[in-house]
Length: 429
Image 1 (cartoon, rainbow, N blue to C red):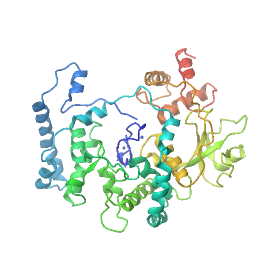
Image 2 (tube, rainbow, N blue to C red; image 1 turned 90 degrees about the vertical axis):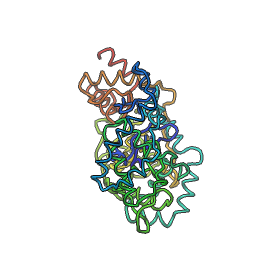
Image 3 (cartoon, rainbow, N blue to C red; image 1 turned 180 degrees about the vertical axis):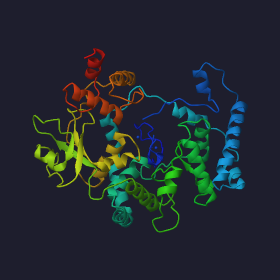
Image 4 (tube, one colour; image 1 turned 30 degrees about the vertical axis):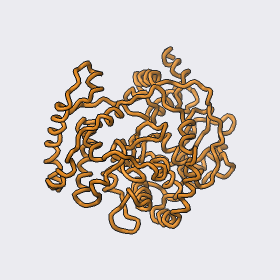
């Protein structure tokens, strides 16, 4: 899973998916990451970027072998035999293409409406509905057991691998070893590699089965090794085969979501319409308080009678508006991107036969590029609103900082960064 750290849908940045918090990094990478690498071996691209001469293949191979030598005592302490360890790394070398992927940058992130079009476009909806019918009995049992709606589980399946049509073709051991030896994301990938070795030692997977994304996520719903060990379940008993048995992968995904706090009977969220002159002081509260304030569902139905929610403006207050619940945040543990979670929820809704998003997206509105978002983040940080790094990506931290600034200056607190807001910050307003 992202539960994992996997490769994204066409417009998704590599986000870390659950199972990367295990996942919380992962499961999936949507969103492309470009953090600096501490090099145990230095790829050609990094060497050139630093103005250094590229290391020869023999130099890189030597560094990789030293990494494996240091890894062995850690694996041994986890009960991994020398035979399993040697078999796992026989013929394995660093994969320079993976390091290149971690360094990819995108000047502009696809707008949310483009992302959602990709999430539900093409054959995603009819294929999801067909998958629901094919696995109806298993999904009904899974929903009853874990309390997670079947359309959410199928939505994740569709977002992660296109219902199993592409589960990744990378050697997971090689991928994890490459990232771990480069110390990408600190010790995260080293620890995932150690868990993968434990899986081999315990016979939970064959060496040849360990295929997946460039970040090590595996199976129909892209579980990282640690997420597999914690959350994977065999639908009919026994160890989970998330690679070739969809029911096991779907049950494991539902188990993952429930373990992170999914509340049965509570929607992930839904689109709403705000009344004219809405008082934006009410950004979160009970469904009853929103109903009293005149908020209605876009499809005309009543708000739930109980529960808490918060307003979400994915493209600002001029675009579609949503009420989100804690279950939306549970989906984000699979992949921390707001766009990903909204994509899963919307795809699930469409698979279940619910309506398209009603509001108009501000497609003609000018958006901020990466360098502009970084400028905005730096300025908000200097003012004490933002505590993160200036990475140029608009995540929940940036949205919250923008919202606080807007509230302080009596602007509509939709948390959406615009060129006009950046101009205001630059002017020192």
